[in-house]
Length: 195
Image (cartoon, rainbow, N blue to C red; front, side):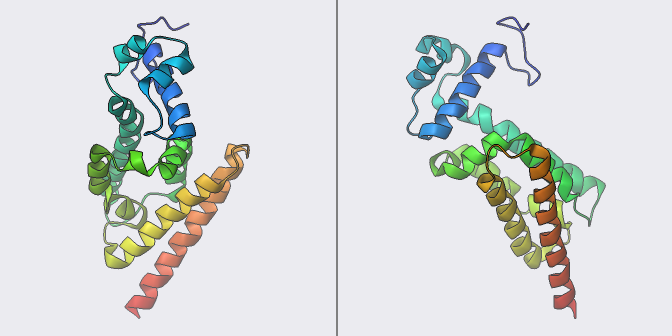
């Protein structure tokens, strides 16, 4: 059993993780703008001061939920670009990433207010191009930008549309297959442009 001050696997205390879990539930139900720190405290059955103990603002909560997910993707992109220059990572690894962060990804696709947070916009700008080259290879160019964006949108859309009760292994298989078809389409487009 984790004590109140003990850190969880993510480096947060159990109390902070409970606050984050409740915030994600409420943000998903009512949106970032429609959720207050008092709502989060009420959901947990604690005082607002107990929430403030872990996070000083709603913005802090949002960033604590989302930044680690984005940072992990940035690290994957950096690893891909340094280890396998000219080649993208396997689509299966990206699908695993999406599935491991499914709740956050689904929430973000539905809450434009949260995605408009200045710090998240800045991080998104840093990711542009990196994720496409991560999937397609570092020499993707303009064609890769189009196909990379289409691939990312298709996978995110499919993740969002999937019923919440489908088995994760089934969803992994379908998303991987979808991604493989899109990457094959990209390679075909490259050959067509080179001809």
